[in-house]
Length: 515
Ligand code: AHR
Image (cartoon, rainbow, N blue to C red; front, side, top):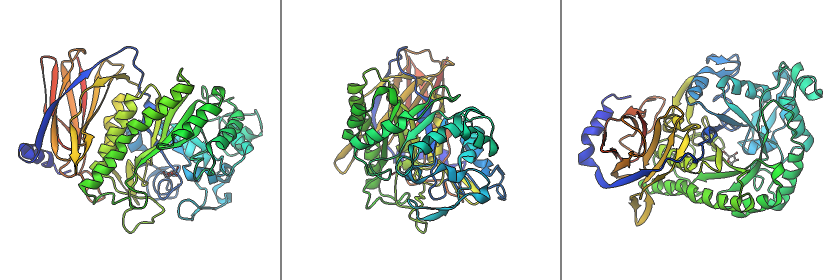
């Protein structure tokens, strides 16, 4: 990192950025508020492009330092994020995946074509044991996405038995032991299909609801995982009918969660570049990202109608920014760079999830490494952390903390006559008595002054960090891996029960307040 960059930025700030009006923020701590599930901070790893091969897994014979073929640098970086869960093996790939192809001696495993992602050869060298052992290494909970589109109920039931049933209980655990693992793994989260309305079988919701009921019936929980969670393949963005038909037709004893996928994309036919984008394209992506608020509210309203007791959770198990691939890379590999725009997308989305903690209990950004809005990019032995990685790091204090409802009138970020709320905030209270706030200013031009009334909470020490940069398009690269990093933020004052700070354009500030 250029050590002078932040200082230069701070000195220039008054002259180059326009200040908006002060934003008054009220905190309303409430002992009845929901806990922000740490699983909102989950990740996704599909057999797509270089996410698994080259990203997570390089094989035991690689020169790149690894543990059973899994890159050590990746394990270190993801452990620092305390990733709570990891979804695998897809995505669209999951509905073509036959798990028995990926067990036993690697040299005997069949090769298949990865038909969704470039027809490349998939040699199945990374399979069930490799994934579940990797989750243990990462200290994260696995979320297995089962093949409903082209698989059978028997295959699904066998996968559950193979992974979670006790040794000696049936042929599947015996096969597991023969393949080197006597003790079952803990697998609580099971996705029953993926995008069943599209790559997962092009089904109608009425038909999928019936298929789901059949698969869910045979998802027998004899495991040691403390209760299985069966996740129905959910709607795409604003397909509210999908959620309604599923909620209407799936009995509550067969479902624990329903999914939702929403990607922030300008136009599927013309997605625009990941790094050399215009302010117009930034505005369009932020508009799509902020739509998450409306999507969650409307899907939840439908769920409330059929499940007022909130027994079924909402899992946003795919979300993120989707742009054109980097020039010169395989268009089926979905490899894109990650800029301050992605940091704003991630922070506003995570604030929305936090603020809906009563129903949103789980989410997975797409995808962890080298694919779409990745937290990590690799190039052979090199690895960089993206601005999105740093956002996730700044949000770790919210994991399993109690939500503090916030209220404020956001100033607007205006572009070519259109308006978006400039400020996004979520707050929580941790077990150790600290209060956490994450404040994003998506405005591309204006600094906004924030005044937080903290009289209701016991605070006399403030620690603040900032993720910021001079240009929206700024990013980390293999040549300059620390161009964007989290920095200390001293521009915060406190007096008369009010914490005051100036949040620069397209910046995220994370505050920890303590007694
Ligand atoms: O994340 C990439 C793809 O997007 C997934 O495979 C699919 O579920 C979604 O359409």
